[in-house]
Every structure is written in structure tokens, then in C-alpha cells.
Image 1 (cartoon, rainbow over the protein chains, first blue to last red):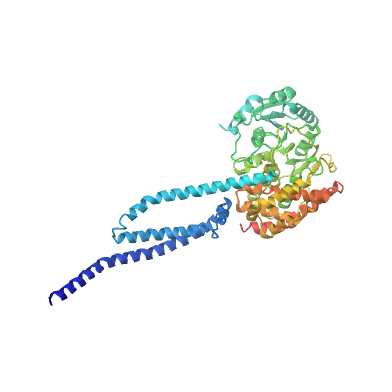
Image 2 (cartoon, each protein chain N blue to C red):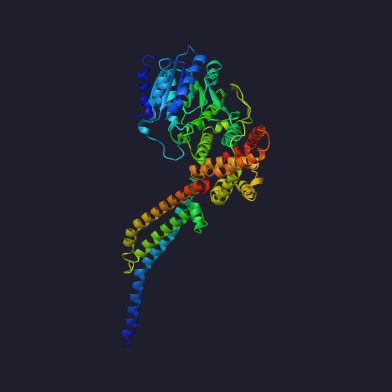
Length: 152
Length: 427
């Protein structure tokens, strides 16, 4: 009995150490992916913002009434800023999911494939929404101007 | 095959062995059988007075009339004058994607295609002069030919623009926007009246054909809106010809004010981008030669409903404010907002504020701050306000008061030009 107890203790400690040794690199991979996600997301945001500003994207959106629509919806930030933020989060989430996938947890095993399948649908829905918003704005403005000019 | 490729063979087939002419008279038509007979008779009489020995070709470009307009012309002219006929809108197709491209006051759809055909034939046949007259006129006399042709043939003038005797408040779009703005930009006192009749030299005809105004954005605004601007900006010898009162058959017109305004102002703004180097350097203005018998200011004309105009302005102020916020500078907008508090009978749009408004619209057009058709059409209520103000200031005085008010407005446009040039450069 007196021999079994230290052995059991040692066995338990060895097993825990092994488990930690097995999980720790994966945790480190996750942390590395999170850090990379932050850095890459930030870089993409900065570059995209500069690019959009160089092409006067906000003025273009204003031209189609998108800026005023967002303002009506309570958004005070510019559209280029919103796109920059969105791209940051997209990049960060992509890296974060890759890191979580690297943990090899049963619960998250099929998450990446699920997201990959879901992403095109989300993107299409987003683009349709944007197009609809632009078209609705354009027609609304045309109708308003015509009505005022006809003094109706 | 496009009209530009087919028009020359069509005309050559009709004129036989004529290789060269001195004068081309162009008549764009569309269902003008009622009036075109007297128009061509006046043209014939005018030509026999001004240049009886010159070789003349009368070219009719028809947009697909169903009332026998070309036959009426043929019957009235032949065999005394050489004539040729083309259909400038084949199949009656109406080109252009946006609603700005509507028939002009002449009622002829695709009028620019007709002008292009006249210019192409005039160039191909080496014409020294080209005259274009509208077929819906009831007031055209043989004297018009002298006013439009003589300066081109005898005085070396490149362009004779029409100048009509108008009722006191007729042509207020020209008086309040196009004339003062283009005078301030290009430094020539051209009244910018359009339609009716024009005279061109062979040199100017060739120049027009080289310009990028026949297709694309430039063509949206209609040819009458840019003929004068191109001639003035290109430094041609320009003049004005007094043509008396313009009486025309208006049964085919009825275009909305906002479309007319968008066409006229849009053409000016569009050409401001093309001729930026020209207008930035020009200061002040000089008169241009005038031909024909000058007329006194016209009679009072029909009643002007000032209250309706002010109501139109106030409705614009109430409903279009979010759009004007995008276009106008904050101090301009503040000035306009203050006008909303004034009663209709005391309404007054200060000249400096009006000038600043037009310059802000030009800047916003250049900056593409808004879809351009929306931008141009949203100017209509402000224009109504300015016109109401002009009427209220001058209606109790003699007709000369209107001319004085327009002159003061022109000077304000010229004086405030640095406001435009300084901002334009930074966009």
C-alpha cells in the first residue's frame, strides 16, 4: 500500500503532464493564430481604409445615398470606416477559427467546414442587400425630386 | 450601320455630280408639314437676296414624320434649289439611356443627329457657310437668311447665335443662369438664347465634328445647350443675330421645366470640365458683334404666378433639404434656409447668394457629390425662387429694369468667380 500510493501519485502527475504537453502546443497555436489575426486584421483595415479614401469611396456612396441611409439607421461612422472594421473582424475570425480548429476538440471539429460552406451564402446575401439599398435610395431620390418639381 | 456612315452616300446619291457647294441650309423636321412650307419659302427668298449666285444645298433631316413633311419641302423648293433628304433617326429609335435626353423645344427628337448630318455634309462638300433653321417656326422671314448668312460669308464670322425679342420674363433660365454663368466663365457677352436659327462657318462646322460632344455624357444634354459654349470656349469669332420675335408651333413640346433646366445647366457644367484651362484664366467680359436690327425689350407678356414659384421654392426647402445639404456649402445653405421665413410678397433671393448657389452646384457636379441627374433637377425649386425674386423686384418698373437686374446679376457672377476657381482646383 505504501508503495502503491507514490506510484499512483507519480502516474497521475505523469498523465497530467502528458495531457498538458499534448494540449499546450495546441493552445500556443491558438494564441499565435489569435495574435496573427489581430495583426493581419489591423493591417488589412489600414490598407483598405487608405485605398477607399484614395478612390473617394465615401463620396461615391454619398452620391448613391448610401451614407444618408446608414445615418438614418443610426450609424455615425463613414462607410469606408465600416468596411475597414468589417474586414478586420473577418480576418480576425478566420484566424481565430483556424486556431480553434487546431485544438482538435470534438465540439469544434466540423466548425471550419461549416463556416466555409456558409460564407458564400452570407456574402451573396450581403451584396444583394447592398444592391437593393442602393437601388431603393436612387429611386426614392428620383421620385422625391420629381414630386417636388411637380409641386405635388 | 450607323447614321454617320450612311448619311454621305445617301446624300451623294440624291445630289448627283455636285462636288462642292458654298452654302448648306439644314432643316431638322418631325411632323412639321403645317409650318415647314412657309419656312422653306422664306429660306428660298432669303437666299435669292443674300447670295443669288451661290451654289446652295437644302438638306432636310427628318426624324420619321408621318404627315408628309419631306414631300412638302420638296414641293416648295424644287427645281429652284438643290435638295436632299435623310432620315436621321432610322426606325424612329430614340437613343440615350437617361431622361435628360428628351426632345428639345423644336420638338425634333434626336436633334443632335440631324445637326451632325448637316455638319458632315457641309464638310464633305466644302461649304463656306452652314445655316440651320427650325421647321416649326411661324415667324421666320427672308431677313433671317441675311442675319445668319451675311456675317459668315462677308465678315469672316464663325458663329451667329440667335437673339430674339422676348416678353419681359421670357427666357428666365437663360437670364438667371446660362447667360450670367457662361459670361463669367468665358468672358463673352453672349445671351445664350438657343433654337430657331444658327449660322456657322465651314471652319466651325469642322471643329464641331472633332469635338467629343456627339456621344456619351455630352450628347445627353442636347445640342442647343452646347453649340454656343463650344464656339465661345474654342475662341471662334462669335456674334449674335437679331431675328425678331420667335413664334413657333409648340404642339409637340411640353417638356418639364426640370428637364430643360437640367439640359441647359448640365451642358454648361459638363463643358466646364472640358474647358477648365480656358475659363480659369478669363476675367471680366467683352461684348460680341451684333447683326440685324436691334429690338427694344419685349412687352410684359403673360401673367407670372409668383406665388406658385415661391411655393415651389418653399416645398423644395422642406423636402429637398437632405439633398441640398450634400450639394451646398454650409454658409450657402444657411442663407437659403433664412429665405424660408420670408412671406411670398416680400420674397427676395439675394444676388450674391444665388451666384454662390450656382457655383456650389457646379462644384458638386464636378465632385460627383450626387447622381448628376438628381443634382441638376434638384436645382429647379431654387431657380423658381430666384425667378420669383427677379419678378417681384422688377414688375412695377419699366421693361428696362429687367435688363438692368440681369446686368447686375452678370457682374455679381463675374465678381464672385474666384469663389468658384479657388474651390474647383481642390476637387
